[in-house]
Length: 454
Image (cartoon, rainbow, N blue to C red; front, side, top):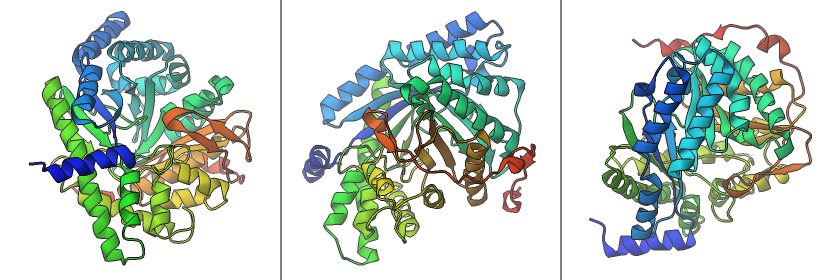
C-alpha cells in the first residue's frame, strides 16, 4: 500500500526535484513479419507496429494525468532489423526502406523514438548485418525517429575488430550526411559491448529475440531527487551517504514500477522491466555530475571521481532492486556529456577529459555517451576509441557503449547545440597519436579466459 506521506513526497519530487519517468517503451517482436518480398515485409512491419502500439501515446498521457507523474517519452523498440530484413533485402538501400517504414509507423502512433535498426555482430557479420550497417548513414539521415545500434563485442565472444573498424567509418559517414545540422544524426547511433535485450533507453533499445511478442519496459530518472537527498546529509560519513542513496533510489524506482504496472494493465501488454538508470537532462538540478560534486568533488573529473561514481552506481542498484521484482536494461548512472549540465561545466572547466570519462565507464552503466569530438578525427582513431570501450565491457563482464559525435567543420574550443533533452556539448580533444596499424589488422580479439565457464 502507498500511504499519504509517500504520495505527498512523490508530488514534491515531481514539482521541485525534476523527478520523471523518462520513457515507457513498448518492445515489439517483428519476427512474424518476415517475408522474402520487400514490399510485403514493409507492409507487415507497419501493420504490426501500428496495431500493437496504437494506444501507446494516449495511455501514457492518461497515466500522467491520473498520477501527476511526467512521462517524458513514449518509445518503441523492435527486433533487430538485420534479422528481420535478411530474407528480403538484397542491397543496403533495401534496408533504408525499412527504416522509413519504422519512422512512419512511429509517427502514426505518436512515439517519440523507435529503436531496433540494429545488428548483433559481436562474433561475425552476416551479409544482412553488413548491408544494414552500411545503410545506417542514409537510414538515419532520411528519418526523424529511428535510432540505430550495433553490438560489436561480448564477454563470451570477444571483440569483432572488423566491425569496429567499419563502425568508425560509418560514424564519419553519418556525420558527413548531417553536417549541415552539426552532424546531429550521430546522436541516434550507438555501439555496444554486451548489449542487453530489454533496454528501454535510446539509441540502444532493441527488442531481443529472447523476449515475448510484446513487452512494456520503463526507464526512470531522478538525479535531482538524489542530489536533494544528499544535501540533507552533507558532511556525514559514507555509511549515512550510502543509506541515503539507497532509500532515495527505492522511492524513485517505486514510481517507475507503478507506471510500468499501470501501462501494462491499460495496454494489455506484459510488464517487462524497470531500468534503474539515473538519466540526467540539461535542466539545472537534474545532473549526475552534480551528485558527484555533492558527494565531495569540486568538479566531476577531480581525483576520486571514479570511486564516487562506483559508490553511486552500486547504491542505486541496491536500493532499486528492493523496489521492483523485475529490474533490467542498463540500470545505473548515465554520464552523457551533452545531456548533463554538470558534465558540460566540468568539460568547460578542464576538469574532465576523454580518458577520465573512459575510466569512469568501468563503473557506470553505459559508457562514452553523447561526446562531441572534432569533425576531422580519423575513422581509425574513432575505431580505436570504440575498441577501448568494448574491451572495458568485455573484461569487466558489463555493458559498455560509445555514442560519439564527430562534428564536421568544428574543432576543440567550439561547441554544438542539439536542443531539448540532448542539450549542447563542447568539442572535446582526442588523442592524436595513430592506431592505424592496430585497427587495420582485421579479425577478432578473443574472449577473455574468464568467459569460458560452461
